[in-house]
Length: 199
Image (tube, rainbow, N blue to C red; front, side, top):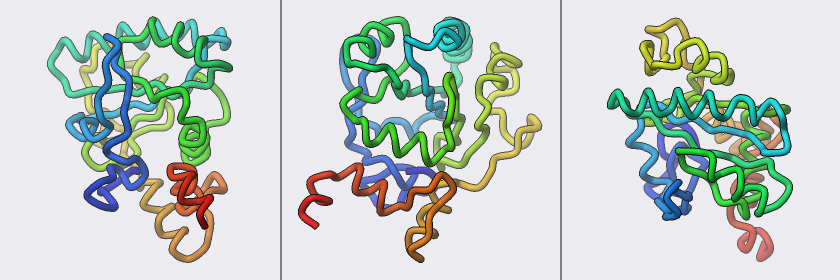
């Protein structure tokens, strides 16, 4: 779900607003709260990946700096770990939210929609609309770890691209496939496997 909400119960056109996200203190919050962010980062990473383990502490420092400055920045960890235990151990090192490890189909759908082929990868989205700010959030954050140029939009030289999920919706309505080879219908089936089985 990216871009303008497709319906009142979805955000960004692809994420059910009632999906439970994990918080660093062991609690949960609904995905619907993400729209209160000015910038949302989707962090694709895994503990088994050495570059990820090297980047995560740097990202955590930048995240804390930006949040402590009162800026509405949020990150959601999208795990590529090989087990729930590895995911849980790695998430303990992070100060942001996480998508539950069990949502493997959603993780795969997001990876395909954003063309994530390697990790670590940080996708930056407009928190209100889901419009793509940058697919290279790693360099954005490492170039500006204090968030001086936050929210890294066109005013800071990083022009937002079209919402990829709005494009996906258009492709799905015509039976075509969005970049990444997945239609909106495919993603909806991944999000609602029971409904897909009934079909």
